[in-house]
Length: 490
Ligand code: URA
Image (cartoon, rainbow, N blue to C red; front, side):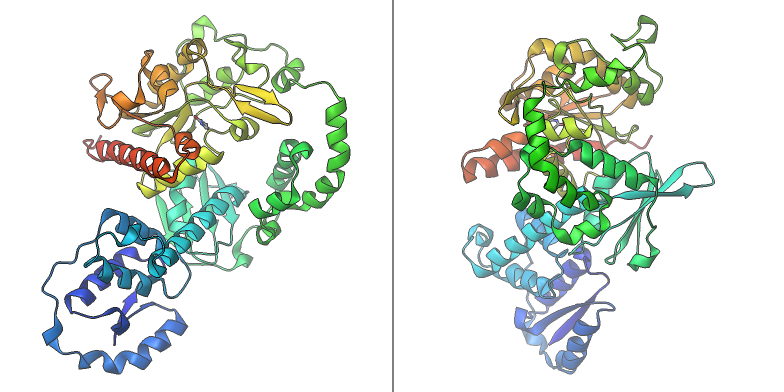
């Protein structure tokens, strides 16, 4: 038996090097053991078997080169984050089998393939929960006058490193730390760093942000949509203890029926109009003297009061762009959806989760994300608000803002997610199917990568269509990433 020590629970590179060595030494999966440094249980296993280490004959050394498909590498990078102690052995076994059977991963009924996919699914779910349930608390002001935020989160798997780029994109302007019992992530506005696990006692206690979360949650809670079972499956009780707003749930659920009746009895509301009523002077349209904005904050202030087309009326709020204001990469979607409209942030609904997972998979850590149209266009249907695509005229009105954002962020690569984004960016009609897959020069300094919108994956009818759509979007994001990586240093 040969044992390999990995430096961390999510040490993909360590596992890959160990697997390569084990394979070249001709070791079959039953004769290889992986353990994580400092992990008592597997360390004992390793010591038990260490004696057998040197008994292997050198005659069974593999002369063949080890080959791993891109799909396998992507799956392995994800599966190493699982907390199951057999994950590394499972991957080594699959890797050995892959040498004889290149189509192994397509055999969904195979026990190893099935198990690895279950692990990957559990990890994606855990990452999704971390993105949804991390709550920052303000802990003070640093020497350079920047506010510091700290959050405590308890992931099931080793997902902190894999999920941190999401928070970096989303909270690029804040300095934050996410503390967890499985390692911590820190962002200082410039650099992402990681440190060892900490105990919950290190996390900050209640602060003023708790009230903010509670009032925010109470305001977006729609009693008409209450389904306790799906709510507890979306927000499992294990996360409640760290969520300030969770204290409200029992009361909101209890009052839901009464509130629903009140909603049905009352007139339809027009949220922005209602909000604007107590404002002194709603910004009708940008002032001529302010056609050029100095900063994104300045732009967003005027954008929030935009009345250039009627889409602002039924919307809850304007959804401005988000992310790193100096990023070389800008992603442009179509328009906010239901969740984005309620939360005031782009790409936080199902299509957004998918997009962020794919950005994580393609290792895009830094991007500015916005939409061609800044208000949610929908058709009320019963209790639901059904997405409606914006018209060419609505996109054209909103181009004013998109162009100003592009000027301020000055990205070198822009990704257009779908046809509305193509029109918003170029002012022209364009088909994704004709334009995707190759970079297009917008001007000397900026290249455009056209791709499909992530919601097209969610809408795909068959598993095959879904798979194809997923692969296309992934490969276009990889193309955009490679263009950014190839940029000369500033
Ligand atoms: N779809 C988009 O195009 N943008 C969003 O922000 C969300 C979904």
